Length: 81
Image 1 (cartoon, rainbow, N blue to C red):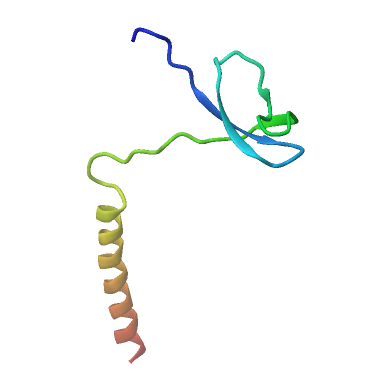
Image 2 (tube, rainbow, N blue to C red; image 1 turned 180 degrees about the vertical axis):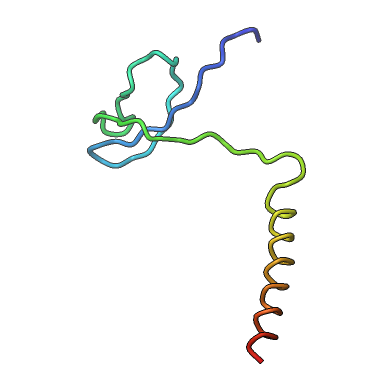
């Protein structure tokens, strides 16, 4: 149970385009052999997840913008008439 957890990296084979995952240490070489054809695997970029917490994200920001834009639209319509 007390083992070390290694990060999982995604790779794509240059020869057969097979996509696979490898558990490696941070400092290890950034290439790995393909499990299907043994060709060279190239590490893919995998961004970390984004977690939005608390007020002020999308739903509250978006609602405020909608209120302001509708007021501006009404003012434009009235000035055009």
